[in-house]
Length: 274
Image 1 (cartoon, rainbow, N blue to C red):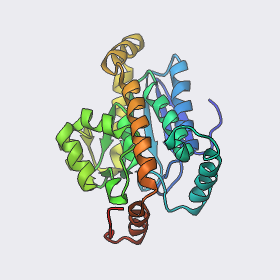
Image 2: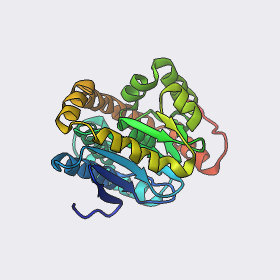
Image 3: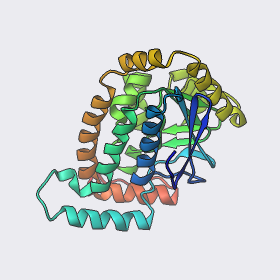
Image 4: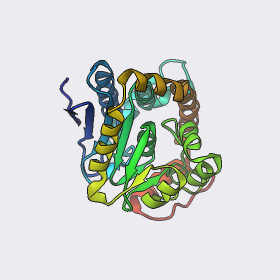
C-alpha cells in the first residue's frame, strides 16, 4: 500500500480498512478526500480485496468542512484571487471545493462494496462521505446532519442526489430544510443507516458485514454492484456541478458569513436574506 498522511490503510483477509486519522472531528479537505479515493482505487486493483470498511478515529466520523478555520479561509482566498484572473465558470472562485468534488466523484466510481462505520457525527460533507458507502453501521450516539441551510449555504458532496435516493425525497427535504441532527436510531428507521449497535461495537460490526460480503464471489460482487449503482457517479457529478454553482453564489452573501459565525458561537443565526 502507498503511504498516506491522514488515513490508515490495512488489509484483513479479503477486507480492506480505511481509517480517517484526524481526530477528534476529522474535518475533511481535498487532501483527505483524495487519499480516501486513492486507497479505494488501490483496493480495486488488489484482487484479494473484495469489500472495504471506512472508519474514523475520534468522537466524530467526519464533521465536514471546517469553515471557521483561518488557515482554510486564507488558502481559499488565495485560490479565489488566482481564479478571478480568468473568465471561467463562476464557481471557479471555489477552486479548492471544485477539486474536492472531483475527488469525491472518484469515490463513487470505485468498484467494490464499502461499509461505513459511523461511530459519531457525520455532518455536512461528512454526511455525504458516509452516504457514498453502500452500507452504514452506526450507534445511538451518532448524529447525521446536512446543516447547510443553517449555515446559509447549499447542500454539497452530491447529497442532493444521493440522500433522496437513500431515504426518499420527503425525508431528504426534511433533513435539508431543517438542518436537524438525526440520531443513529432515527437514521436506521428511515434507511439512512442499516444497523444500529452499541457505540463500542460499531467498527466490529462493520467489519463483520464487510467480511460477510467478502465471502461471496469477487466477480459476482463487482458485476452486481455495477448494475445496482449504474450511473450513480455520473448523477453525483451532475449534482456537484450544480451544487458548486449554488454554493459559489451563496458564499458571497451576508447570510453565509452570519451562519458560519453563529455556528461557531453556538447561537441562533440572525439571517437577513441578503
